[in-house]
Structure formats: C-alpha cells, structure tokens
Length: 248
Image (cartoon, helix red, strand yellow):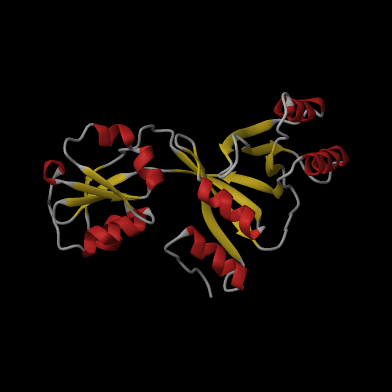
C-alpha cells in the first residue's frame, strides 16, 4: 500500500499485526525527554521486533493561523513528548493552556481546522506549509541537541548483516543485588551498555521493568549465552531485536 499514516501508535501496531503493512515507524526515545513508554508497552503486548533504528535531530516550531503573534495565544496543542521537550519555552508563557494531541502533525491540523484564532501548535516547520499555518517562533525545544530515535518494527524477527545493537526488556528478580548481577554479566563479557532505564510495572508492589540497549550481535556465542541466562532468570523477558542504527 506504500506509505500509510495513522493517528495513534496503536494504529501502527494494528496495521502491522493485520498484514496491512510489513513495517511500522515509531519514536522510541528522545534525548531530553526519555523513552516513549507506550511504544515499549505495545512492543511487548504484540511481541514485535525492531528491524532498524535511526536517530534524527528534532527542531520544534510554534505554528498559528494567519498573522497571530505570541501574545495572542491562549492554548497550545501538541504531543506530550513535544510539550515536554519544549517545557522551558512553555513555562515562560503566561496564562497559556497546554493540551495533549495524538501527535504533532495532528496538533497542526487541529489548529488549521479550528474556528479559533487564539490557539497554536508545537510541530515541525514542514507542517506550516502542509496546513497553511504561520511560524511564530522557531527552535523552541529546550536543547539544541534534541534527538529522537525512531524504530522500524516488524511482526517477524529480521536480523540483517552488520546489526550491532540489541534491545531488551526484562524484570529483575525481586531480591537484593539482582540488578547488580545483571549489569555485572554485561561487564564480564565486555559488552557496552548504551541504555539502562527503569519503569514501575503497573499493578505490582515496587517491581520494575528495565529497558536495555547494548552493543552486540547474536552471531556471538557469548551474547547468545547471556540472552539465554537473562531469559531464564527474568520473570518477564522480551528480546526486542538485533539491528543497525543510523543517524542524520
């Protein structure tokens, strides 16, 4: 079907699940605002895999209808990640409400189609031309080094030559020193952890799910042994893929 767009992350997963699309593209992590936890939850729920990833520099702009300026704005729409990435700018505004939209493009469309002229969207500059909006202010993100990692997901496990990054999700055993033991296992093999992040597991008593990214390949016998060990010792374990990462 070529490129198909969806309003929600769930829609992307359903399209791949149903066979409508072979691959899906989704944001997984931002350099200043952390992981997109909803995508991790959906990866685990659907048992999908990461085929590739790409790191992209993100520049947010503020878009309005017509010639309205910053002082005229009463409400700003955007995705929660973009609102978080622009929190410093938003805190500098007075009496301006922020409203979460499904994504930044949807926010721009909402402003374009609204009958109001006192609202704005945090979006990309491309959306200004797409929806006939005016760019009031550029580069409103907290940091100039604002990067988002996007992943390509698939229903089937696909590993291509040159894949040098592995992603995992797992829960550590609920005992003292369990996380230390896991990290030591990576260290003893000389594997470079590029990401370690935790998140409470809903409905549990202070149990955590850990997200791991590390440099490695399943062509290595030591890496395979480590994955086998972690899968046996972790109550919740998900191998998310072995893939290559680009940047641009």
